[in-house]
Image (cartoon, rainbow, N blue to C red):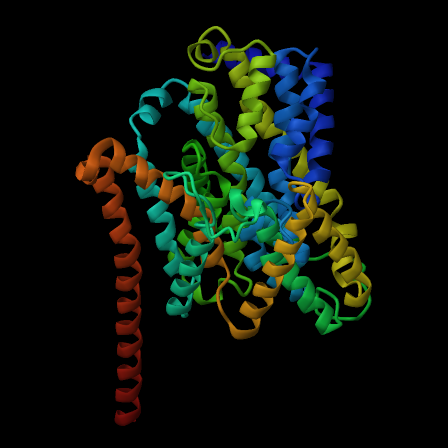
Length: 508
């Protein structure tokens, strides 16, 4: 195995392979910044150019392009509150408030550096999982996948802050939206209002772009200030980048936990990065000493979002390589690239083509470090945009929103969905209703319904007695019990401190 690892590294550093990876990184950098186009669409567009390439060259080009979109998607999330990718939505929750405080450099330093560390973690998971992953993933079935979605939904409580009731109501609304479309069991339309467009459900990209980006742009337009909150001159030096990097190193447990969540969820087919980011974000909030700061500019929320977004790419490659089950839309396109290159996922990729498999590990790491280095080099012109007056910047951002929504499926109806979502987002900001539970429920609703139906069809109610399901139920209970115990301990500590202070005052 060590020989295959070194051999794959030498193949990646071939001049032509390295050049193709850099071209892919450049394309992915631009695509990640532009909201709506997305990594899977870009991979599909670039697939015809790979017909005459060698296998390692194919993955250097395509995989280098894919992993970079996750990194640069966080840039627009932090700077403008517009997710570059649907999987970058969590980065807007704390990154954009920091930018509005004038701390865009610190937020970008943290999110980019944590992205690089997350990519290394995901690559290590891919390398370590090659010999052991097949029996593990095959042991999971629809009941386990359903329980994972339920665990994700329980983070609605964590992501609601003090407004738990509002969070639960928003989650209920999200579940209703998730029901729109064709019933997967009966094959009949539900809540489609005789509109063919709604048969596939509400599309995620325009919903995310409108709910977060559209709402923030409208708020910026009404405020008449710059994104950074001032109308003064652009600072001559961009400060805080180094501090963001130091913050990431100081919060290394957040990086590890979020990377582990991203890699694990990435391995589960059908869940993907949209689920992983909010589970990691919710876990970071629960573990934080200052959970009340989340959603207002918490640096550990930014770090969690960056780390999970890149770690999930390495995880999603594991089932694709091991037995040809793509972890998501992007890896489904990569699976086509496998076949074009003459490779069969499964035993062949773990034996005779082991060098090609390990080349993916190197490509994931190298492409991310190149992208992060390029992003750091471009920080000053990027952050300068946040100091431009709102009325001057809003037309550009509105164009970006429209293009992002329309390009997801080339339908004008997507633009209408984006505008409706933006209106909902503005109302949520105005009356202090949490937006994340709504989005999380939309993402997980259809997945949970599908796996619940499969679980009951295959096992009846006996699936509730499966050991893995029981273990996930225990985890589910811990999600509620641990924060409650922490709050109780903090209350006791506060009461004890108050009592001591009163006693000292009395004796004095």
